[in-house]
Every structure is written in C-alpha cells, then in structure tokens.
Image (cartoon, rainbow, N blue to C red; front, side, top):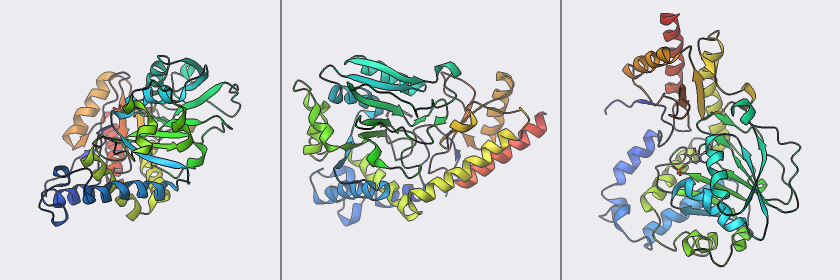
Length: 362
Ligand SMILES: *Cc1c(COP(=O)(O)O)cnc(C)c1O
C-alpha cells in the first residue's frame, strides 16, 4: 500500500485507515447487491439499514436520552447558523451567544438576521485565547437559547465544562469536537456538527435535537429549513447525502470498536500532550496561542519567533511528510489538528520533529 501522510488537516480531515479500506472493499459491490450504496434508492432496505444503524450508533456512543432525535441534514454547520435562529428565535425572545472566536462570530452574524441577539460572554479582550467563565451567567426570562461553540477550530480553544442554563436550551456548535469525549446530552437542547472534522466526509451535518424544540418554528419557514420536517421524515423528507451518512456510520463503528468515547478522550489527551509538551518545553521557541486552561484536544495552535521561521518549519515539515500544519489564513501561525482519526504515531512523529527542528534552528 502507498504511504499515508501524517495528516493534520483542519477539515476535511483525516479518516481512520480501516474505514477507508472498508469503504474501498464495499465500493463497487455493496454487500452482494452488484451496485454501490450511492447507486440505489434512499428508500431501499439496504440504505435504510445504513441510516438507522448510524442513528443508533450515535445514540449508543453519546448515551442520548429518550426525547432526542438524530438528524442527517445538508448545507454544513454554516446552514445551522441560520436554521437555529429561524426555528428557535421567535416571539420577541432574545438569543444569547458566547463569542469565542471566528466560528462563534459567524453564528452571531447569522442570528442577527432573524431577531435580537445578546452577547452573554466574550473572550474578545484576550483575542479569543480562552473560553470565558460562564459560571455566573444570567440569562433573562426572555432568553430563546444560549449558543456556544464547544471548540473553536481556528483559535484552538475548547470548553472543559459546559454552562448550566436551567430551562433555557443550550445550543452547541460541536463541528470540530463532537465525539472526542463523553458528554451529557441531556444538558443540551440542540447539538450540531458538520461531519468533515471528526465524523466523516463533508456533505452531511449531524443535528441532535430535543424533539419538543422542533415545534417552535414560525409557520412561514420554508419546509427544508424546519427541524420538524426532518424529525417527522426521519431525515428522509428528501434525498439525504447517502454516501456521507454511510461513511459516518463506518466511523462510528470504528469508534465503538476502539473503546467508545472514554477511550477517544484518553487517546486524544495522550496524543495532544506530546505536542503541547514539545511547545511547553521549548523555552519560548514555540508559543502556544491558547491559554493553558482552554487548550483544545482537537486543534493545537502555536507560533514561532517570526513568519520566516514558521515558513521554514512548514517547508521542512512538508518534506518529512507532515500535512496541514499551516494556521488558518485569518490568523496565520501554525495549527495541528489532532482529531479522533489522527493516529498517536503521527502525533509522536510531529512532537519529535518539533524538538529536532528546534535543535537544528536554536
Ligand atoms: C468547520 C466549522 C464550521 C463550518 O462548517 P461547514 O460544514 O463548512 O459549514 C462551523 N463551526 C465550526 C466550529 C467549524 O469547525
């Protein structure tokens, strides 16, 4: 087999090798039907089994309580930025948002198109290098929901615990850290995630929704924009992205067979410790962007003395098979995305490369 890269891409991102190999084995002839899963009806019994199994695996892995629905939608997390307020922000209520960086900002911008938005907390003062303390939140009685971004993919900061919001639904954009660790789904009214970071290929957006919230949408909403449509139709109102759902199903099976979310958490912590240790032990040669207490286990952001040095780092890393280490174009610097599917070995190799590069450059 050809050599696999050390893939630290931010999204679309690494997938488990076993998943790719299984998809390859089943591609031309899915379970003896003489066709691929992409070539048959989304109402066929074969696809139906794929769809139902992926939903069941989500429920099992995340321990999702009764009263929630797992939806497979399209349009990416960016469409959820609009669908959330379209469905949940009505009747003169106020949508509360925590501003933690680029992705939160996009969600806020979109919500403002549909109603009143309040910034419940912000880490703008620290240039989004930490997650604000939300232990003393006060949301008015007219709060429609509180929206958080559980992991800021560009800044590299991640919540270590989620705020208590009482009867106000907590809505979370978990695009870049869903399934990286166990969570208590009952704390949330709605969770959404574009698949292409930690779940599978792009093309499907997973929404985990407390069913009563689907009933709040105004009558005037277009059919496809209403959560109720997809709850009632079991995400089969129209043609779902069948291949993406199939791939997500394979990734979920891979997570399960590798010990579930507790094992993912352990592995993610061990993997990222290698790289954060290389940063912390470098005496300032590498500088972590995120405050220690908010460091992400999914996106490690760091900087070097100047852009010249960062450029050399990237060039030498590329020559040794490391991919995707350039920071987001909006902030620059360096970023290693270490999603579930990024192997421990790749992280160890990167940590060793970092130490070695420092020795050669220091
Ligand atoms: C990538 C990302 C998005 C955007 O996802 P799309 O599926 O491209 O719309 C939104 N939020 C977060 C946290 C992300 O990482």
